Amino acid sequence: MEGIVHRTVQVNGISMHVAEKGEGPSVVLFLHGFPELWYSWRHQILYLSSRGYRCVAPDLRGYGDSECPRDVTAYTVFHIVGDIIALIDSLGQEQVFVVAHDWGAIIAWILCLLRPDKVKALVNMSVVYRPRYPSERPTDVFQAVYGEGFYICRFQAPGVAESEFARVDTALLIKLFLTNRNPRPLIMPKEGLRDPPNTQITLPTWLSEEDIAYFASKFDKSGFTGGLNYYRALDLSWELMAPWTGVQIKVPVKFIIGDQDLTYNAFSTKDYIHSGAFKENVPFLQDVVVMEGVGHFINQEKAPEVTEHIFDFIKKF
Image 1 (cartoon, rainbow, N blue to C red):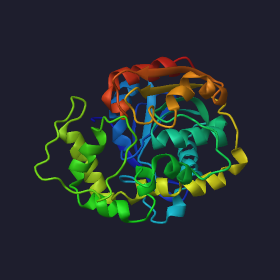
Image 2 (tube, rainbow, N blue to C red; image 1 turned 90 degrees about the horizontal axis):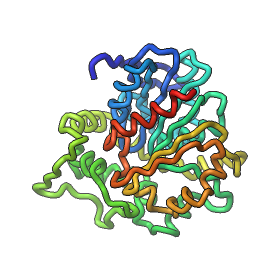
Image 3 (cartoon, one colour; image 1 turned 30 degrees about the vertical axis):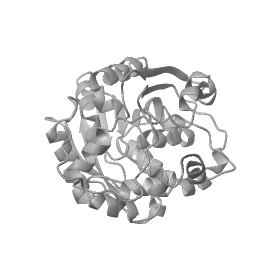
Image 4 (cartoon, helix red, strand yellow; image 1 turned 30 degrees about the horizontal axis):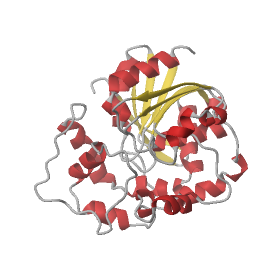
């Protein structure tokens, strides 16, 4: 991580930690997911900064060394996208390339809806864009399809998931999340999480104990409430986004997903992508890459390949 500069910027009423490397005229802005940090983009930052790009990766609101408001209502997509717009402005940029994954991908899609003028092109991973469903709240849909045990449903009650996470060593919890390769919907046990005795997880080659220690140290400091509040604000964000019902994404897009990703194997996402419906809602979608044998945390698991996909796309602009 040598040469990566860390600083704090004031954006949209909060303090945001930003990791940055490179001095090129074009900015690549990286948006991470749950439960991750700017650090998830370490490989992409090093590569693209060496190719003449200025790489900027924040800890999003509620994560790591960025400010973590306690109130759930401070985590609507308006708040989070507002943070990103203010960050782009603070960089002195009219437009940036955006690269995002998981919750970061959701925020990137909303950014493209609200302020397409700010996005030169988008590389999004794992979470497809779906137009707002006008008649049912997201959490009602999740519960109807997958039941109360579905992780997003279990995350809704303030403090409950935090209490369960607190029963498990943070480093072990991060390992369990990042190494999960079950493509089926994530159902949390009714009895809650426990710290299993003598649990040994062999890390894959793309994760080191040092990586786990970094993630764990930051979540030990900030807790998980900030990241969980993104899920708890889902229905409020759905209400606020009513004026954008049915609106298409109108920026150039490349989409990357693993075929073992739980998001690829849920909610008919596979059919949605390959039937052409995804392209109808994202008319400037230029490429879809489905990586075989790859799970959810694709930008870390297949870092060299994903980075090449990013570079091959953004260098066109």
